Length: 93
Image (cartoon, rainbow, N blue to C red):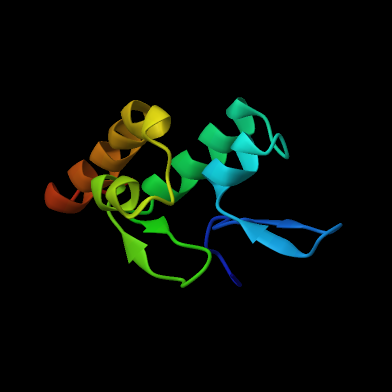
């Protein structure tokens, strides 16, 4: 990913394998706190990023697709709701 997009995945520089953020947490490459922070950054943009395909989808869809672990759902739905609120109520800062 390039530009202003949030982190979509984790590259293990040892084996050159790309992990989803959830899989990187499960493999102990990052902490749960780091995983939540990176996933929330995605949800706050209105979509989750599949690092294998670059496809973007909503939180529920990303969990169903298997690249976001269900354990993060509560945190991510709150972040996604914040994005939805600002984009449906035309909030300006």
